[in-house]
Image 1 (cartoon, rainbow, N blue to C red):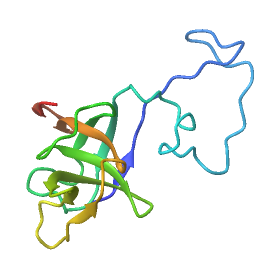
Image 2 (cartoon, rainbow, N blue to C red):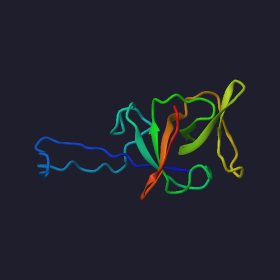
Image 3 (cartoon, one colour):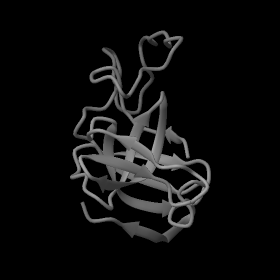
Image 4 (cartoon, helix red, strand yellow):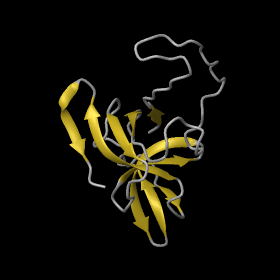
Length: 143
């Protein structure tokens, strides 16, 4: 299951006014900033952000199109649903302790667990999910 990063951000340049147009427009970079590199994304490490779920590896808990809220500094422990960066790809998985290391486990048994030696690849903990267009379809996860 790949994660699509959908951060909402607000940037103001000199000359911007609330409700007004910007005096100048900064050129768009050819490559988007890498959120895995501190300081390169637009949000600080402590801010929560939202992702839209793609794929089926975390069904039945997370369906394609669900929106999840990630707490980057949340407490990752065995059983937590986490966002991790593995093999050049963002994934949502359930964290499971395994001896001296950890496993990133998909809920769908067709996907193999990924062994990690430490929590380095874990970039945040899922604290909430919702279904777009359904206000009451919200579930919160304890950190």
